[in-house]
Length: 373
Image 1 (cartoon, rainbow, N blue to C red):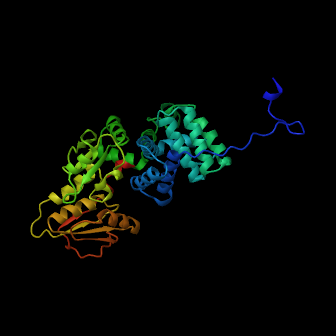
Image 2 (spheres, one colour):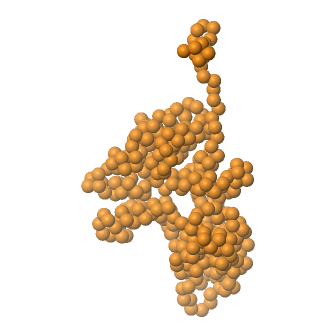
Image 3 (tube, rainbow, N blue to C red):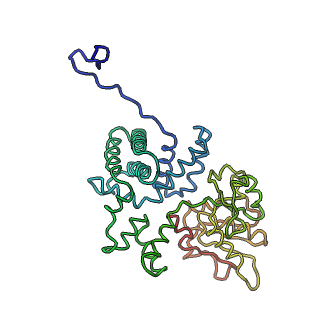
């Protein structure tokens, strides 16, 4: 080795330490981390948090469609399999999961999803996650993240499930909960409702974990499906299967980029949710049909569709939500509705209205989007 190729030595003859390298910020993974923190810290809705983050990133970071698609997959994929990833992470650390700081756990979960739930190469998933940890957690905790992710990388998802899920014969509900990333109480409730053996409940839980299509609703009187199809392009739009107000985004993308969605004339709403509002509006009513109630209105998707349907009939809608912060989301969803409406924060078990005050009443308890867990 020539003198020029040897590492420099100090006056004492010791090799000098490598110069400190600042961590590189990865805008996509940093955005995904910010979204997960909002869900954890503020109990926020991922589908409400993510669009404004993507819009901002498009303006400030020059996000392209592929960047938005990766960020969306990282957020929704991590949340969708959170129960499974928690079990895997728990098996790779020497402390209870509750003792891991939530921001550290979010970085680990993002890394676990890249390793176990995507086609991102192992070395890229680990290095990108460690780099994210250096940015948001500091170098010290980044070493912990690196050590845990390298353990996770030792097996694929199927290998981990064999290790962390109890045998079906010993605890069927917990086995299904870990395998399919559903809270145990949800597995139990769905199984009771469905009846039957193992095959049926597994099919249902697997269906819950499929990546959902992005479905838009054209709020009647304010927008049309034709407008949404034209804005998306015929090759990128599919009609709804059941709702006449639905348009499916065949190629995904960012709904907030559509003018009708930005204006509140259309919104993101799966067809199951649309059908609930349509069922209420279609129910036969004897006598007057002037006052409608959505008694559990947050975050406002069904209320916005109901408000549009009520406006077409000259009816008044009262949207009630117990939690004030959710009531504000309902106000935002109903903003610009052409018909009379009022949003209040009230406890439906102690209603401030008199019995018999309404002609149509919708109470969706629990949420119709249970599968979104």
